[in-house]
Image 1 (cartoon, rainbow, N blue to C red):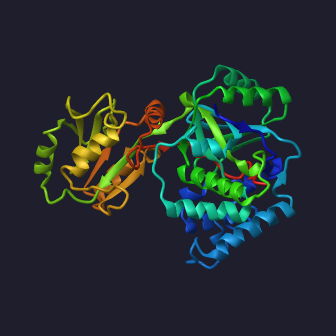
Image 2 (cartoon, rainbow, N blue to C red):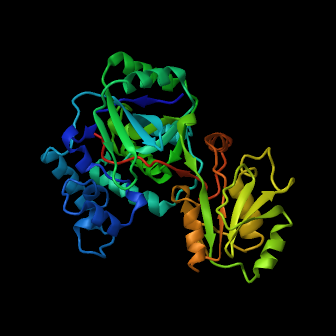
Image 3 (spheres, rainbow, N blue to C red):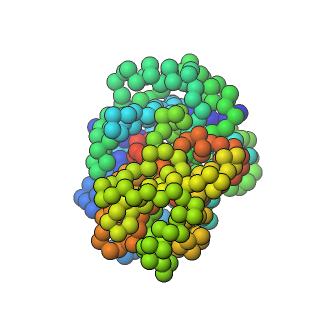
Length: 415
């Protein structure tokens, strides 16, 4: 069973939300955050990217930067830019992209559920990235940014959420840069709060969709606090961390594509010939060609698009990893032909999120920066859940979720 609880959110007054909210810390560089924040002293970047308050070139890992985050978090509260709710609430967070809306419940997720595997992951995490976020959680004694979970579709919760969606939201704005709509409701009714808690208690698992490092950091800090408190009882706020939970069927997963700098010494003709061993290769011409189904890939090379369809026997339908297109392309193209083994460390490959479109792949190859591009059909949420349930880990750079959660709509204090 999944254990969750409501919490007293720390959030901006309605009239200030658009000045406070921001993109997540990990989707932009320090110089971009500096530009986006500009002269807006209320921008959450001063808390989640506080290096912008130091001279350019200051490391985001400088101890002074973490201390500045805590100083700014306190400043935001002192000035009334962030105010804590007086009662425990759940919250609804809706995002609309290209006419499609997904509704998430903002909850306190249980640290022990992460530790015992009730909260399931599908990606490996890096300890250095975990430690960075752990320092940020420790110094602020808060989860400043949420993590992104999925849960199995639930009719009771869907009806409850849709009832709130017919009412006026607390926040409603179009975000700059992405142009997506973001809405936010406060759930204060005791019966509705109980219904949400009870329905989650019926779920065997929750699934991390996006934010594996933030999830790990939040849970690990919570576990630290459990050990450090000689009077630990189990009901303290640090036993929970903030997550936005969406119904699995509502989520949009985009393709996560590859661009490669060289053909490992092969000519274009030799490369295409090598591909024909495991793929049916068909030239599609100069117009952008997008994969239409699982196990079909689009290749862009020398100004031409090709369809690559994996042949029977090159994947295992009974293996939740082996059936993935990201695994097929990694094994049979990147490793076998191009000798690119570790996707996380190789300097010969880069990755392009699907929101940028296949035109971005074409641009990077046509510019001469890259030699070829490979577009993949998106992974499904069901595939992610199957992999998490099996206890296996997805290959790196497999999923790209959009829209990203905006930060600053609500914050969870650990005490």
